[in-house]
Amino acid sequence: MKLCYPTFYKSFVCSASECKDTCCKFWQVELDSNSKARYKSLIKDGNDVGYALKKGISGNSFKNIGNSCYFLNNCGLCNLYSMINHDGLPRTCRLYPRFINNFGGYEERGLSFSCEVSAKIISNNKLVLVTEENNEPITEYTNVDAETFNTVKAIRDKILNYIDGYNGSLEELVNILLNYSKTVEEYINADKFNLAINAEFNNILDDSCFLYDTNLKRIVIKKHLKNKILRDNWKEILNNALTNEPSYSLETFKIWASYFIYRYLIKASFTKEIYKTITSSIISYMVISSIDFEFINAAQLYSKEVEHNTSNINKLFKFEFNKYVEK
Image (cartoon, rainbow, N blue to C red):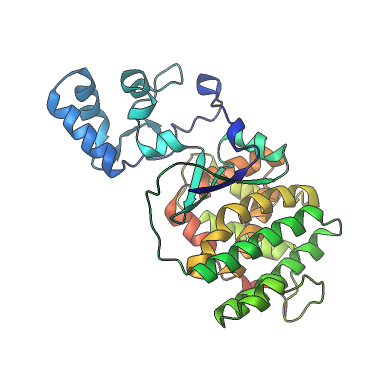
């Protein structure tokens, strides 16, 4: 199998009980099919592990007690881990904060911004990708079209390189990315793959001119207020963001956009929605920059609220960006 991952990917080490924002809170841990089968067998055995699992599972997920996972103890550690070790945990718990995008014989891996440790790693290191071959068996297969995949990946890597080397204004960069993504998406939809790969970045604005204005910020944040709220203070944080002065900067945009585009744009191999991925990175950055915390803390909270809830992340990608961009 061929793997792709950032150079910093393998440097992650969980801070366990030292974590100030544990991943064992505010989320519902859903059980994968293999874990469910194993836990069902352990429950039938009737031993201490089975008894704990019987009490801690509700339907297809672990129970939440006061917004915390049933198995989270007072020391900030996982009781289930102490009973059956890391390999016995559900796939979500074993994997987090890592993410995987699998395309059969090719797999991309990365770290999520929602973890405070990985957020620091991402923020303090340039996104440099490594590709390697290993002996891991191919466990998943996809029906992605090879030419579309290769084109989207080439475009994604080209965008990441452009962002890394860009030194102009933030709004100019945003408009360049919007125009470029719209152009290459049109080429891909027309099966003009060579034109898509060879398309150039430019700052000539055609039918859209994006500005980080107050009105658009309020619209975007109000849309987020209609999301599923996972933590008690998130609604208050967003309401405060409505009146906060945003702290936009080219440097923090490049960090967030590079992370977001690496994680999601490759999925356009299936959807061909390159433009939506770019717009989603832009509007999510708008919310993050309006939160009255340091960038890294604001981005980590945003990621935890939006990226790890299926409904919330789907709404982000469905936001009708064009309705609010100046013509």
